[in-house]
Length: 295
Image (cartoon, rainbow, N blue to C red):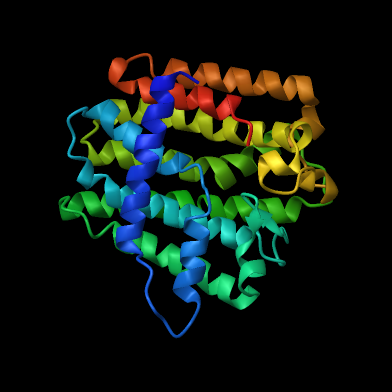
C-alpha cells in the first residue's frame, strides 16, 4: 500500500483507540465485565469500520471537526467487537482464537463473553448520543447503525450463515448472506461518516455503491485467505470454514474465479467514487487495501 495510506490508517487507528480509551476506561470493578469488554476492544483490530467513517467524512468535508466523528468511529468499533465476541461463542462458530489471542469466552467465561458483547452493543448506541451533532443527525446515525447491525443487517446475515452450515448455497444466496453479514455494517460505517459531514443524497448514493462493493469484496478476500493463508498470519484458525462445511466464494467459484471476483468488486468501488476529488483518496486506497490484505 502507498505510504500515505499507511500513515492515514495509523493516524485514525490511533485516534479511534484514544476515543475508545476515553469512553471505556479501565477501572476497579467487582466483576470482569469491563475487563472482558476492553479485552475484546483492544486486541489488535484493524479498525476498518472506524477508518471508513473518518475517510467518508473527510471525502465530504476535508475541514470537518473530527471530534464530531470520534464517537461515531468508537461506536462502530464497539458494535463490530460485540459481533466478534458473539460470533466466536460455542453456540455460533466455536472459535478459540481471535487476532492471535484466546477468544473472549476462552479468556474469561462463556457467560462473561455474552455479557461483554451485550455491553459493547449497548455502549455503541449510547456513544451516538454523546456528540455535539444536532439531535436530528444523531437520530439518523442511530437509524443507520440499527439497519447495519440488526435484523435487517448483520444479525440477519449471521442467522443465514448458521442456517447454511451443511447446506449447499448458490452464488446469489451466498452473496445475499454476505451483503447482510459483512457488508451491512461496512455500508453503515461509510454512511454515518458521510451524514456527519453533511453529505447530500447524490453523494450518499455514490458512497453506498462504493461501500456495497467493498463490503462484499471484504468477504471474498476473507474466503480466499481462509484457503491461502495460515493460522499465524490470520490470527484465527485457518481452514475453519472448510472444517465446518460452510459455503464460501472459493468453494463455489474456485480460487482463481474468487480472486477475479474480488478484483471486479474493487473496480466497482473505484468507479462509484468517480465523482469525488482527491479528498476521497483514502477511500480509494481503503478499497485497494481490502482486496490486498493478508489477514
